[in-house]
Image 1: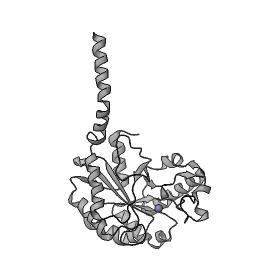
Image 2: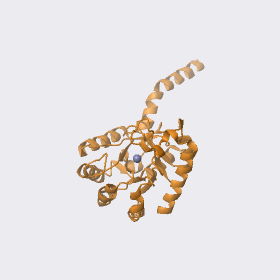
Image 3: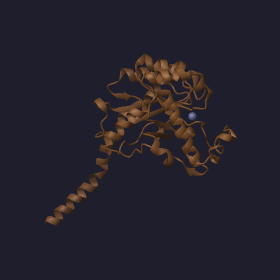
Image 4: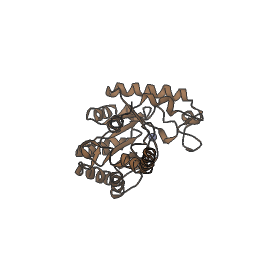
Length: 269
Ligand SMILES: [Zn+2]
């Protein structure tokens, strides 16, 4: 009889397990101050429109973003004081590699010397370490996150992320905007979405979806009111002003701060 009760308890627990897992994802995972979702506003490639349009908008509303610098971009050299000032004001400077290697097979604009198909894992490891040193020279910070250029992860045919993961608190890869599960999230493979031409309302809808799920949303913008893969300045400001007006629902912060919190909250080591 006792065994029978134990068996029943085990069966009941197992049948309830999926529900418990979902609760873990959406309800039992707590954001600071009880917000419903975290929001990472990130900007790739070190574009002028980010310093000229996106950054002043974030500062106007008092929100922090993450700027992923491709360090060989002449715009980093030309506007170094601007990037350094952004870091001083609490924004994150992230690693977006030295040379932005992507696969020539899937991106026909890739220059041959920047072809990830012919760059080794060891070369990527060396270059990302150097990029971290350059970023340290700019902002004095030691903790860093990375966004994979083009979302391409195969260096000369081999996945290079395991080799570089120890150098980063977290890594953004290609994926969907809204994180499906905080419990199942791999901090070194966080899916991000690169919007292009979306309206403010479309961007806000993604934020609301993250709140409904209790997870996070990752936007990787490129041009804002200019440059390429652009989001209009108006749509960007509509999103930022909405987030600022709803701070009790949304924790908008740097990807570094959000992922440091996520790892602590989950008890990752
Ligand atoms: Zn890029």
